[in-house]
Length: 558
Ligand code: 9MR
Ligand code: ZN
Image (tube, protein in one colour):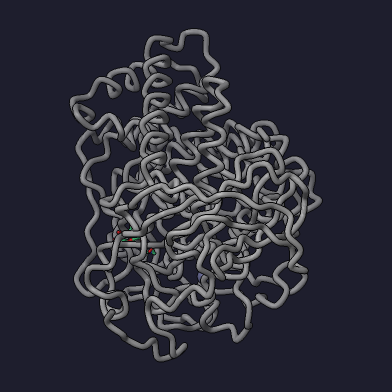
């Protein structure tokens, strides 16, 4: 194996895990199916507690060869071990990381993946009483240059997108919508949640206050005629510095029709939530959504986005806005019940754009976002809703869930991804699939889908070919060098907990990944915990947001 050293850590690729057996390092519910993956030939495995006392012994079953990881896999099934506690799996002198059995193994995790959005806030100081050691001064408060019309405007707030400090309308709308849907679907889980953010104790659920922080910025990103500016960033990504030290000129870039549709959709969705908490704000959201929608109708042609010369910040460019418009029409119909929106939604549902690409109707963003439109229409509580269309959407979702289940059964790690699906941010796809299982479970009542959702959580949290728990702060073996500027620059030893890492990417889309990961590495192992590797080891708001949906669903329906 090619040996290339990561200068900072003096570690080489392939030497990563000190553990030879892979488990969900957050853990397993007492009554659920529990399996570890042993990627070598073995017979008997044991489960021991922290003192080395044995609590279970079983025979590993051969699974066969797994293509995504190139591993020969044995499965250790310890479903029958139901005693709450902390354990390791051992076999042939190898061991797993510590894991837990209990009914609250994901509770803190749900809190942390939700609180991560607070740490992403731009334009305000993160105070020590909320941010602890991760406190920092306010950032990005200067005026931005308006690239299209000239002049300067102060457009502050919102969440930093990811490891970088850019703020992008489409990605922000997508992440915010996920949080809003998590809340709409599982309000009970969030009623109890205490995130320890400045708005805590205000009487609103914390997750809703967090969404408002993003929505206030999104509203500022709308042009007077209703269109939305695509993004607000500096011309080039900042170096590895704290956000308050990033004082380069910021710019508000040109508009795009995809950003406009996304802004419309998320504002309409948010209005349907805020109407129960703050009528004034709900009205503002609804007015913004309507102005965006009118602009879309007046401009049926696709308006794409391109970076101007010299700009290297994110693109989020799309090839079409049909799915974005589909989402916008669905949310507007759900909010108002007006025929105008339903007619558009129904005609877009039949659009040739979806021919041979029906999966886009279930895609949860970023990139394709039709799934949120389908969800909105399915959940629309309107008498004149076209039940035939709603039923078709349900059927699509359930058949996709069966298809995903079958894919997971064919994978040694129980992962729904096939070898070709390990592109940039593959953990997002794992999470989306988990969310689809939760939705399919809600639609059919079939427990099997709930269990499939748990299996995707297990993959994310350590039962994968690298053995990493891909959420910062969890488990004994996890990424500690994420491509996240504050973590690199803050001088604090631990990472902010609860951030979802992009994960394996067989395209190795950055120069450092190409240098570190050997040629020919199987897709599920194309990963390195190196802060330079932005295409493997970054964090992003829309990778965290499906985690909030998934773990809220897991908690609510357990
Ligand atoms: O998540 C995005 C991924 O799907 C794309 O392949 C990649 C390249 O265009 O960009 C990713 O998004 C990044 C964005 O452009 C800027 N902020 C960080 C995002 C996560 O890496
Ligand atoms: Zn900032």
